[in-house]
Image 1 (cartoon, one colour):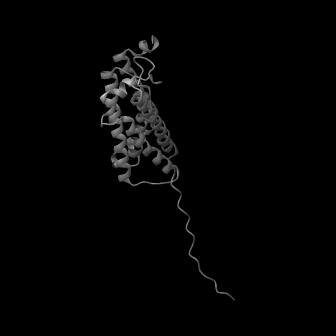
Image 2 (cartoon, one colour):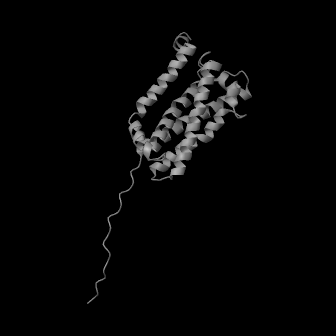
Image 3 (cartoon, helix red, strand yellow):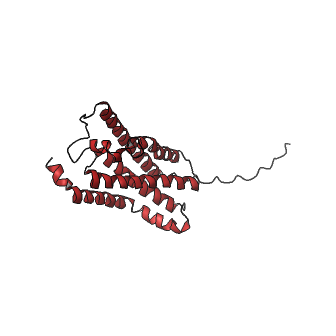
Amino acid sequence: MLDRVAHPPVQPSAAAPRVPIAFALTLIITGVVGWWAAFSLTIDKLAVLQHPGAQLDCNVSVLVQCGKNLESWQGSVLGFPNPIIGLASWIAPIVVGVSLLAGARFTRWYWILFNLGVAGAMAFVVWLMVQSIFVLGTLCPWCMLTWSVVIPLFLATTARNAAAGVFGGRLRAAGRGFTRWLVPATVIAYAAVLLVAQLRLDALARIVNG
């Protein structure tokens, strides 16, 4: 008769960590849209370099145009066209978002560095908004598309990291609470930009009147 071999009791497997689908999709969508805006601006910049004075599709009117922005020093802050920065930088949120959907988990220092990068993008975009509205007096279509995705990217990333305790336990509750207000906060930010553009440039009247 064969001896019975004692086997240790099977431990129930730990539940798989929940995939943050909404946050991952936010990273991917904002990254793709931002990269497309940077790519389109890069194409327009190359067209201007090859054919000075070329009529760009983004030049809708004196107010709504990207030509003036591309030709200004503000459009090449580091000595080369700003869209090149976008072509390289927008890959990051796409990669992080896809990695999260695949089940990847990142350490605290990784999230801190990523949040710092996103915060830097937000600061740069705010500066570009000021330069475009108050100095150049234009509303660049591709630039505005970039603004429109950087804002929710920054808010969502910061709220997620605060809720996850990346910035310390004291901000965890605040992050969880703010997560519920991401959409209204984004809409308020959009409205603030539109209000500033309207007050400074009388944008609505100039767009309607061509």
